[in-house]
Length: 293
Image 1 (cartoon, helix red, strand yellow):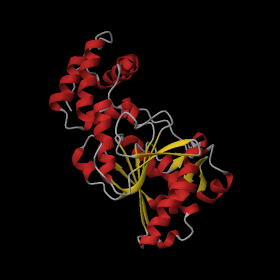
Image 2 (cartoon, one colour):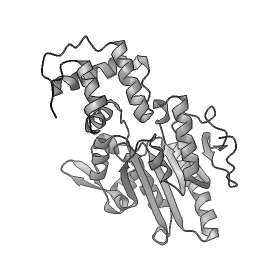
Image 3 (cartoon, one colour):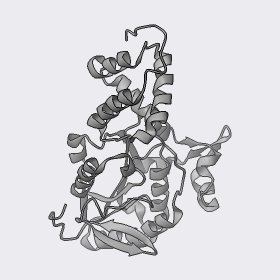
Image 4 (cartoon, helix red, strand yellow):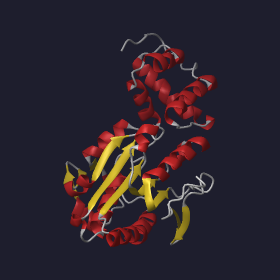
């Protein structure tokens, strides 16, 4: 692409420029950066513009808005989104999923003669969460070979998805993996750790903007949704839109798991609230009424 060369005025990116860029990102993704994020956004964008040899913010913004084919905007999103995760994060919550909710859903499906299970990891980052869920399925479902199981793992950041598909992690990512599982599902590769192929076969990674209504509507028949520490990046309107689409994607009786600081209480009344071992989980009613969304 043609780039205008010149000296970058790093003082030019101030509040007004931040608001313009923030609103543009929000319009396309639903991600909302509050003004307290000004320094972080300014630092990363200024460094990025310098690498591109963009003369100033206005030049960069005009390129994003009028000339970009989507490639540069994706680079920007990759740059600004934070992806801190590791295997078996929030272990106690995962225990509620494995020992209570998964057992309930599988028992109900087995009784109905439907051995099909779908999990959606929304905002999967570098893959530790969906791979953790795959390990849990392999450990908890005795006759898993008789089941049709799949984990849909999605993220808006294409760089983290590439790393997730590679399936190789450092010591920090695997530090909380129980030793039994570590020995069973990881192989040492050049000082790092590669996830076992059987675990990888359960997970399918794909790029998804949670504000893309068409793609969101294509995801259906989901039994569990893990969307932990993702909704905090959206404003109230966007949260309601995303959660409404989660509801539509879920099977009756399915569960949604959020981060420990997140809640659906101010977003929707469509889900039943359940407290299991001090954790709050949200279940789509078996009758699947759509009122109150």
